[in-house]
Length: 154
Image (cartoon, rainbow, N blue to C red; front, side, top):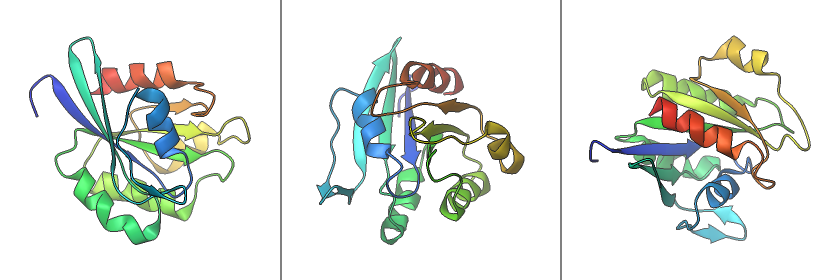
């Protein structure tokens, strides 16, 4: 990647809203779905203030776990998406441990705050993200703050 380009991997467990988040952050994304389930890596890019951010969204189902490893190669930053209605799951913890073991800086977007909540202190108790933003991808709540945080940490 060029100096003014960054790779951000959007990662999380199944049905947390990764693709919806990307669709509402970026005008046009490439995606492959089967019956509403992402089966390949989503892609889209966004240019802000002369910085091009390449977003790669990973499928969340366990059977596509190998794609996480592929997507994380050469990444500058990861965005972990959590589902506020489910709380922090074992799979969420595994994803965060994977990022930390690879020393990949990451932020957290707590999605679906219209139907649930996760206490940020609970998140900070087990991991050390660069930031936590709460919002609702469907309603586009928190997305401006999220982009600003990503910009300041990449």
